Image (tube, rainbow, N blue to C red; front, side, top):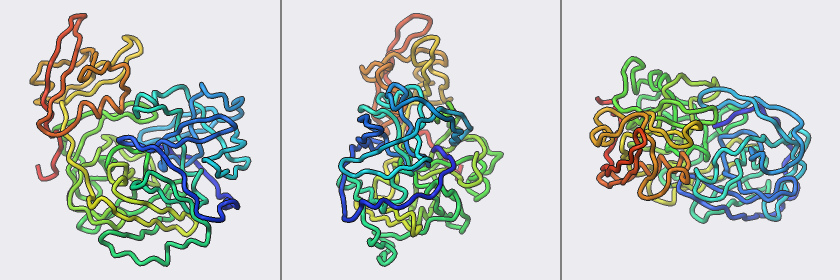
Length: 392
């Protein structure tokens, strides 16, 4: 989730009738083809990013003419910006003005992470002033004219839900998530978060789910824009997520205090992919239509390995092995070099896909090629649930 200050824009004048535009779905992301400043780009659609685009500086959009400060789950960082002079999604031209900018960053391994060609990120500002449906069922955006009013729809609160956006986080789609006891978390609808939901340890303490003093048994690592951070999975109790009743779900917990006063975290792809979602930012309403019949996905199972790319060693180094995990029992050590996962070379995978490949169905197995002190060894590990339960 990336945040920045944004301003209101005039609604696009050219959306006179319902318009559709297809996107590509990967396991954990939406990839959109666009034309920015005359350059064809493929971008991961991220409603958790309040700006326009983040694009690899390998794409020549023009000379950098400014800087911007961005915030994520963990910290802040600065980046160069380029004015966006034009942006098109198919035949739909998105109106831009002086505040429309693209953040330019060095290659972040987007293509490796998502398993398909990707040049960067497309954020909330692109669709903020158009009534937009993210139709996961058909793999399409549907853009509606201003006359389309979802506030007149009556939800059944079983398959369809109508939720109000909160007056906080004005560059994000923030709504309430409530515990069974009535305590609230403020979380953003975030298509760029590959997990089901992500929040912070102090937030769990505040709403009475997990005491701040209690240490989780299973720890791992997550990757955010500002760098790696310790995290852990928790099996959440019954919640109301944006008005949707969910009996149980598994969330990724950042083991640091919440970094934003506007939001406690985000609800991500794992939840959202079960819905067709209409966003009317001007009327401050979101319509959710469940088409899968599911509200949560199968609980993840893993090996207990966390690995990150090391520039010095030019490879993925194991930086954590969870105590008692399959990796620990299989003899994997911190500092080992991870060469391949099920015969796929680690250098061709990228962090997000690496984590996905190390996880899978409980009881399934994964074959790893490793190196320690220059000596090759191989190990086959069975994936098991490594989830912290608030019940102990």
